Image (tube, rainbow, N blue to C red; front, side, top):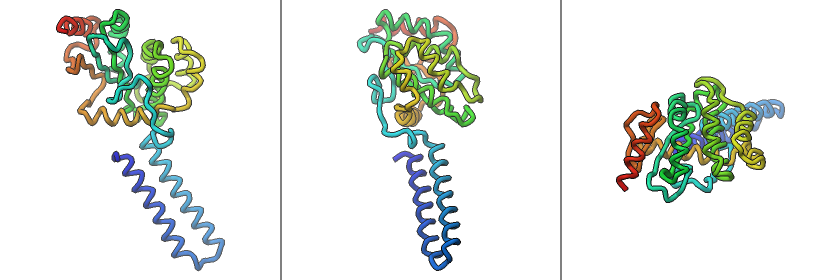
Length: 252
């Protein structure tokens, strides 16, 4: 059980214990007094549940379901599975440096996937939810990408690029759900897929994957790995990553 789950269970147990104790202590009081106490205690429980829900988005989003293309490590696989170079990209849709990375490299990566050189493993993380004024933008955007990767995988790369082309500033509420849906439509995502973006299907998976990724030692975004090795070159200039990928292909 993760720390968030333990915190949630502890808080709920405390609230339940408080109700039980107050029931025992207040039973002799008049009905009106008991009613007031019960109302106050219910309000406490609601506050506890809401606070826990704010800490752990997965608790309010139903069962944990992984996208069809997801790996056990929490990546969305784009491109040909048999491609000789495995490129892992860890990103957050609120991260401005991820936006710079995408601006420099998205066109190159599209070509490398199209010609069968790269199998792209995309890790959409949600650790910057705290930087979107309570709107949980990182989670909402990551869920949208996971939904598209699950149901219209051929459109996932274009949608990923559209989100970064329209990336909100860190510290704002981020894009609205309606705007995310609009960008999905513009990227060619089928309407029946766009219609389920607001169902939050993969939010629990995003939360679990984010925790798992940081447990492996990843501490910042963007982080890029080529065949399992962290790329330490220039992430923000066109060509540097491409050259490293081509070199890795030559070593196969």
